[in-house]
Amino acid sequence: MTPIALIPRESLPYLVLPLLVLVALLGMSFSTWLTLTVAGLAMGCMLFLAAIGLTLIFGLMDVLNFAHGGFVTLGAFIVVAVLGTGSLAGLGIAAALGVVALAIALAAGAGAGVGLVFERLLIRRVAGAPLRQILITVGGGIILQQLLIIVFGAEPLPLPRPLALRGSVIIAGAPLERYRLMVCALGLVIYAATHLALNRTRLGLLIRAAVENREMVEALGFRASTLFRLVFAAGTALAAVGGVIFALYAGMVTADLGGEIIILVFIVVIIGGLGSVNGCFLASLLLGLANNYVGFLAPKLALGTDIALMLIVLLWRPRGLLPMDGA
Amino acid sequence: MAAPVPLLELAGMHTHIGRYHILHGVDLAVPEGYVSVLLGRNGAGKTTALRTIMGLWRASQGAIRFAGREIAALPTPAIARLGIAYVPESMGVFTALTVAENFRLADWRGDPAPARLEAVMAAFPVLAEKWRARAGTLSGGQKQMLAIGRAMAAEHRLLIIDEPSKGLAPVMVAQLTEALARLKEGRTTILLVEQNFAMARALGDHVAVMEDGRIVHRGEMATLAADIALQTRLLGLSLASHQ
Image (cartoon, rainbow over all chains, first blue to last red):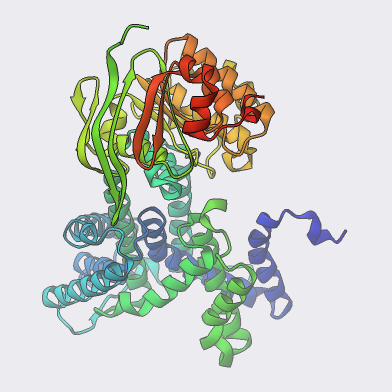
């Protein structure tokens, strides 16, 4: 029996990540590897924040929300509104983190609020009609983007990061960007919180149960429609939080920000397995790391990394790395 | 047996699914404290009747009364909250959750009462052994026990079970029959859809037979059980089904 045969089949996807990290280490110096790995993990965590809401909403409601990018953009504009265009640049680390936390809280609130209105006005009308859902969410996304342009303008808005979140720290000879370390920490916290909420709380169990069998949840006396509204609002709130983090990373916000990353977000959700939180996290990190490693080792191939990764994963596991029933 | 007060009453219930007219005026009374069995061949409309009672499909015409209250227009969660526990044909077990987690969702009011859980574990000891196992890893029979056990764990006035013996090995069917017989002794009101006549006969007090979306016979189970000719006519049963 080969060593690989000793590993349960459902655990194999979890091995892909350490395998990728180790293989990359063979092709570069340790300090380069460490820098790229942290950069990759940070990118993965940003993608996870933007994608988790999309996968949750799809898993529970069977709604593929093409307007999801609009909520990412909403969060990005909120952080511009909070941080202004540089007046808070001189804040110390604690104050800077405090302001970012405030922006995250406001973005989450705005994302949830706009999400609830969006669900009430658009999503509820097209329950169970996938084609109409696509059309209405694409249309709703355009409206959301145009509303943001009306409020914040069409010109790109600069968003200088507070000084305390710029620069790098040197660890083991490798320069690691402070902001990326912060993003990694935040991504881990949100993943852990989502994981615990879904697995340890009664509400989380109910959401997982409704993902699997909505009808049975209702037959047990629970109101699935209330659950859906809650998850939709949580999903759009998380997208807005993702927008805050992306905007601070990019240092510039335009109304196209959400639209630019939504393709990557969809790739993450598909690779992870539609509806799967664990799959979404794993796929986000894989995509972030693969982009960084390939960008360094073979820059000419970098553009095709995402599609190539999706192709390989889907040929291996057509329902994604960790499909819902196994996550 | 004196005619008891019906806990659930269907009067002229019609159900359409899309453009198909499935139920054509079903009249049925489920008396409190007894086991009522709904029999009929595949496609007779038994499952549709149960789903219509639960509001999972809407009655296009007619009345559904539970404890004297009209429920045909209520949404499914509101119907369940009146005290109707439902075990669908597909069992409705949440396979991604553990057995313990399935039980946490048994009752919408909160975690089920320990005394109720103990009674379930006494009826189905295997569920206690598999308490931490993912429900998806259980055998078909164990899943059925989980589905019925979960329904038993909730406070309810009526238990509706759709074909619990379907696809199960005879030893499992015997075990389920025994557990349901104990529920019957406790005067639980049950509406049971079943194609296994031996199980239906062992449990049922009253019986109704459906054909083409209509009730074509109703009466005491003992009467049907004693009348082989009637069984053959209504259900196409042969002597083999009595073994």
